[in-house]
Length: 269
Image (tube, rainbow, N blue to C red):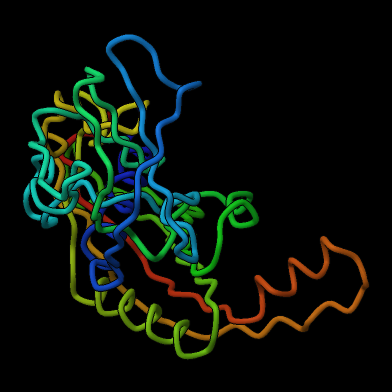
């Protein structure tokens, strides 16, 4: 994994779990057994949520941290109950935080409902993902970079151009998200992580038990400068077809927060 990718993931983690922590919602839903997804030793139950936007739409998911400063798997953000309303111990199941599912190892454990915290704002890193999710959405876009020496000998200042594109449901929501993003970047910094054993979530949406918090050796934290925010007006499209109507809805309440992101690195490699 190259340095810029690690910085991108570090920034997304900071935006989603720190900056947008005020946009976390709580829901309680019944659990539905998915026979076609289950097998011996792995019985899958899916949350039957009616929330809008969907808690498991692209870029959202259930919260896997109790607070952003704790790098261990949550203990309070997700609570599972049996048919009698009694709490089932977390040691008796695994959680798919991406798809909103509970996986139990035995049919003797029958989860009936779940209360969970979820991310109201979708955070994605590709423009193509916007049409696959539901507003509000924040697109994290690192659009370019400059590397320059800052001292005699080895060492460099690595500078990235960052744009956070906001798509919201109305003007008030757009302005709230923009202000929170601005305040989360202005005179702030975030950890420049190494991810030696992968990110916090594994490929199947469960918490990565091997996750190790480590910052890149010889590198400073990611710092932000020249932060600015503005609303973006996009003329509504009037061509009468489904694709154009969808794009008009997405662009109706847009904003952008722009900044420079940089860190100092002791070596040139």
